[in-house]
Image (cartoon, rainbow over all chains, first blue to last red; front, side):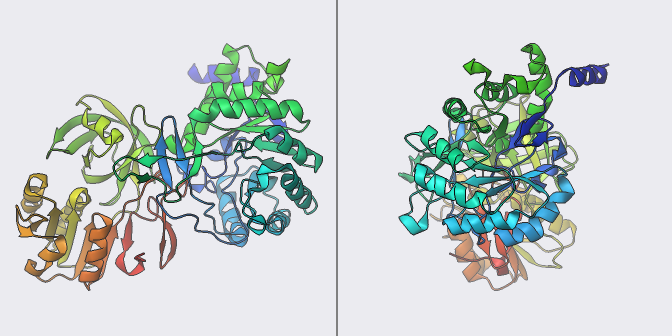
Length: 315
Length: 246
C-alpha cells in the first residue's frame, strides 16, 4: 500500500527542471567539493537518482591543496580550506570520468578552477569534447595569480574576461559560480551574463575563521577558509533572489540547503536548480532524503510542477 | 563498504578522569579490520566526530574517547538506552596479514584503543604480542590489564614516572623483547619519535581533522611516498615506508 501511495504521488508531482536545454529529473545537485567524483557516495546509495552532480573542482595541474588542519566545526556549519585538491585535468579526463561513468549515467557538471585566464581556457577546452559533461561550471573564486592574487570573481571586469574566454572554447552551457565575498553580487552576475554565460551558480563559501581557545591559534592552518552549511542559507537565498531578479539566465542556488523545504524556498527565490553542499558531509544520504521528501512537501504546499514555482516569490 | 546505522548505547562509563568507554549495539557487518573508525553524529554539532574502534563483535562496537571539546563532552553525558547515528566501516584499518610472529604494538593516550582488537587478532593468529602503552601520568593509564588479559606482554610508560617506565614510549623500547614488526597509534610527536627509533617494518595510524570521514571532501589529506592519501579513506593506517615526516 505504501508503495502505491508513493507511485501515485510521483505521477501527480513533476520534479523535472531544465537548465540550458538539459533536462533534469529533479533540481537536486550535490555541490562541487562535497561529492568528490561520485564514487564515495555511490557506496551509500544509487546516485542516479540525483538531478546531476557537480564534480570536484578541477585545475590544469594536480594540486594537493592547503596544509592541514583544513576543516573546522561551526554552529550550523563548517569551514574548509581544502584549497582545490584535485588530480589535474588530464587525470580527471583519463581516469575519473571513466570511473564516474560506472556509477553515474546522467550528464554531469564539470567544475573548473584556474589561476589565470589561460588555465580556465585550457581546462574548459579540454572538457568540451567529453560527452559525459552536460554543463561546465566555472569557479571564479580563485585568486588571479598573474594580477596580485585578487579573485576573478570580485571584479565585474575580470569575471567578464574569464566568461568571454571560456565561452569561446566550448559549445557546452557555461555556468559561472560566484563568490559571495563581494560588495555587489549583481554587478558580477550581470558582467557574466553580458559576456555570454549560460547561467549562474551561487553562492560559493563565505570567508570565515575559528580560533582554538586552548592553543590560542587559528584552527585552520591557512587561518581562513570557506564557511558553509545551514547557517549561510539566508544569505545564499538573498543573493539568489537578487541575481535571479537582475539576470535573464538560469540560476543554480547553492548555500546551506539541507532539506526539501530549503530546495523549494531556493526555487521560489529564483533558482532553477538547487545545489546541496556541506550537508552531504554530515549526512551522506542528504540528497537522497531531500529528493524523496520533495513530492510529499510539494503536495503539502499545493505544488504540482516544481518548475512553476521558480522565482514565484517575486510575483 | 560503509554504512549509516542507528546504534543503541548499552554502556558509557569513565575509565579515567576524562576518558570514556562506550559500547554501542547494532549492525557491525561493515567493520572489516582493526584500526577502522566510526563517525558519530551528535546533537547540536554540524560535523560528525570520528572515533577509532577499540573492539567489536557480531552485535556490539566498543569505542574509547577522551573528552577534549564540546562534541566529546556531549558524548560523555550520554546515558545507556540512548541512540546514536553512526557511520561504520570507515578507513582502511590495520593489515594483520604481514606474517609477523613478534609484533610490537605502541599506543599513546587515546591512540591506545585501536590496538586492542588488533592485539586480539594477532594473538589469535599465534603471534607473541608485546604492547607498550604511553600516558602522561598513572591516573591516566587505561587498558593495561585488558591487554594483559588477552595474553600480551604489557609495558607501561608514563612521562612523570608515576607508573612503569619513566619517560616516553621510546624510552620503554629498551625493556621490550625483540620484535619483527611495529604497529602504532598516538600523537604525531610520538609517531615521529617512534619512526626514528625502530628499524623494522610497520604500520602507523594517523589522526586529522575530518569533514566527512568517508572520502567525500578531501579535508584530511596527507602526502605519502605513494601519492596523496585521505586519512579517512586510504588511511588512517599508513605503512611506515610510505610516510613522509614533515
